[in-house]
Image (cartoon, rainbow over all chains, first blue to last red; front, top):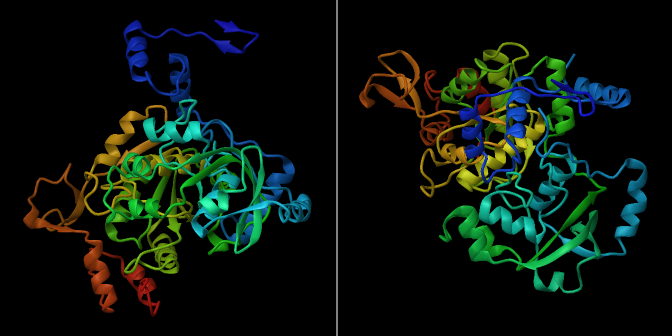
Length: 70
Length: 380
């Protein structure tokens, strides 16, 4: 189910698994099981860094000069 | 891979504002800092220490000592602090702006949000788990000034770095990884020239990820350590002769070793996460010294931080096995110690110091050549 306002989708996970995660994240910086699951999935599908055109050109030029890229 | 805390910190003053800020800083009270602390501040300014925006304030500092986390719960295990003598801190109060200086020259500004006392015993015990003065981190703690300042910094004068050719900022390494087409990258922390055992660990990691980020720490070393330029040359030789093209890259990190074992291992992983790594190699006795920490204590520490956001890759003991005829580790080799030749860094350094060559099972000949090309490969 998609919530168009927040652009979030609900999915179900087994209750036992949910409770195991709850235990695991106790005392950590995760405020919810959802945050933990999202972090795990993001590590499977890492987000690409975003650069402005100008930044991209400057970094590319420097990396080229230093011999890191051709 | 998102930076730690979600965003890459940038506390570098734009070029056009630097002369003005430098002039204004000349009018402020001065907070003199050491070479090492200046490097830490540059790491903050470049985003390598994200989400820190300056030395820790009291609340975060105490939380780091107690839990290995910032006040908001985010993992952070090594306290980055600005310590001053009573005298230097006497005219400085909360709410002030002070100039960060080295040799009397300002290079940045700190907006003081917190001024508080350092409890050296509590600091040493929490961070290093010992009060033994023979531990280099404890010895350094005793030398610290008794007053700590916390707040946000801005840096307007960058040092050129000891090896500008190999110095990249996290924003640049992240771009580099993208250009290389690496979606997964393993960070490898080192302070040594590589032997075959290191190569084995790195290549095992490479079996799971797209790229290897070799990231030697550059800076203050103790007598008998490889010189920084030797480490760089040795790695260049290894990468040139023994790695697939575009599978490994070498970038230096100017930051001191703290020898805080388990806490430092977590800290090292966070820094590499900020550089864009998705994985981090943790070996035996990572960041340890003497026998203050158990051989796998650093690896065990990671279980306390499921929210770290970078995956540790653990490696145990590895050695050359005569019967297997190759590099093995204690998890897979069925043979006894009588068949094993350990990769003893001390032994290899001993040979190299005499100008002799370790065997090719221990160190690649090209790496040995690169080391011996230096008339003085070791710090005196």
